[in-house]
Length: 375
Image 1 (cartoon, rainbow, N blue to C red):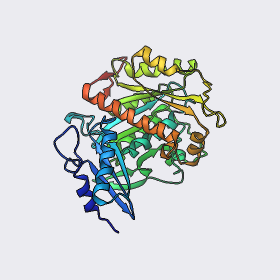
Image 2: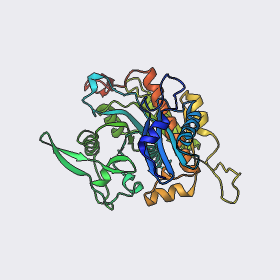
Image 3: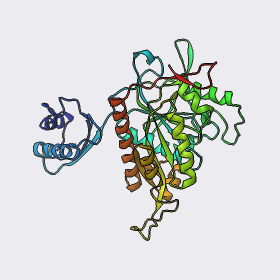
């Protein structure tokens, strides 16, 4: 027996959203209905992340389709969320118009897996149903093209209103740009600071990003001209800091947090992410080895009163998938689930930040002052 999308729509009209007076179809929560034989799949986008109604709505959707179209159907209801709150007010709408939220991913030092986290976070947000972009701002060591498996790709160019514009490369639902697309893979980038910051401005201002719920920016390690250029160029919604739990990494993570918290910069910290939290060997699945120390980032987050939003274990497949251009966030696995949860946590913190704080403004530099100022 064959089924139609209209029949699925009608069956889902029986499912009411618990916090409202209408069904999920009337509330425009249902999208992407697909029918393949006896398998029916669709997405239901809830208005908030980590909704308490998530499981009950999933069960109600499956039951509604079974009751209407038959018990023998395989029903896959993907219950997720979309970001709905924007980042900017009308006075700044000319800066990356259409981009709702800008998330900076930073680390105090190199080697903590910041770019791996940024890559998988962007993919996780895209898998949650959000329109996502990614800028590889680590201009001296661009790694995003390799992690996405698009090293041979080149961004397109288009003439818009008489100006040359860059068209980002797109894969896994993520639009991305990196200086790595414009240089030979084996060439060393020997640039002065002004050249590097100019390149970042081009990736931001001369690209056609379109409508995005999130633009993730993978920053270089440490604190540098690139960081200052970013906050001078765009209003950053918030920053996430990546660190391993060892003391040396945590000492540098403090510096990164301090930079964003400076009164004149004032970019909210969305949270601290602990990478390489523990190692579990395959032959001892219940054993955790805390190679770099235990709960270091969690303790630092408590001390500095910032959210602790995720732990990512040491798993060989994360490194392998990054090298192969198939990031672990794509997998239906325990690691994939960890990155999916990280995406939800970050999205929730963005939502909370937008509900409680005024939009971040671009930092402007007074040439006669020693420190930046928010204008």
